[in-house]
Figure 1 (cartoon, rainbow, N blue to C red):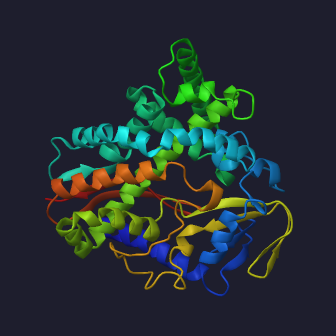
Figure 2: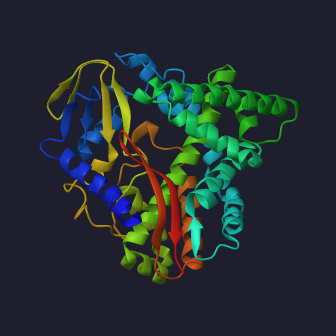
Length: 389
């Protein structure tokens, strides 16, 4: 059964890219009411040209936004310059090389602790996918790592409240409860930091005056929510996808054991081959042109990174998984001003975990138990067991 599910995942990405890249790779999809863009050059155009293709759905969508209360829509990833530049310069202080280096011992310790006593089978999501990014982000923000179950629950409820899913009463209730609980918790954290500064990221945000005025509590909440959610979801999914790719490609797994210095390259290839997010939304600010197509103002445009990453005009033999592929200029972390701010942290987290797994499971890898959920632009791995020796 697990082999069938793994092939379903691989097959879906393969067929989605192949179908999407047919013709000019740009078409209007009636079921979702959006233009879908697949070609590498066109996806890069959409991700880069923020003046024509905005991230600000609340402002530019011509259609109702059922999830407009989602705090992610007010965060750094969903606003455009000039405000975006001001906030990005501020929060980028949390992701300097020095700041990330300071987190590496904690990341290594978390991986070691979570793998202690594991033999034969590993619950990839429960043992690493959830605790590793949550504890790392908790350390970065200076919040309580022992609230991990709450962070996971809040993140999943808020993340799932998007698009047509936001019209589901069950998801609406879960979102409202999670949003209220997270906001209440963070307001308590802000109050504690104002009373007793600790010199961490939250103190930096509380003291900042990016344009002559302090950030509002709503802006602070939006940023911290984005950091918790994106840091958790991206690392969890990428780590699961690494396990899937290496279990399915034993030659690549053997090569990484022989040449562990290739681990960073292999992670980049997983990002290309099975990206954590298959696509991302933009909204036209006025009439726009993509590959000869005219797109009306206010239209949703879905940039499909998963297809762009398999464009044969850019990647030789794109259906092959090559752990040493160079160059590998995939678009999985975006491009331009909205390029993922925490990219280097995610890469370090996953690389440390992969090196540990290579040592812990020296034999062939296989997938024991797996559960997935389809999303509009990808497949989310909810449960995954690595079986090895």
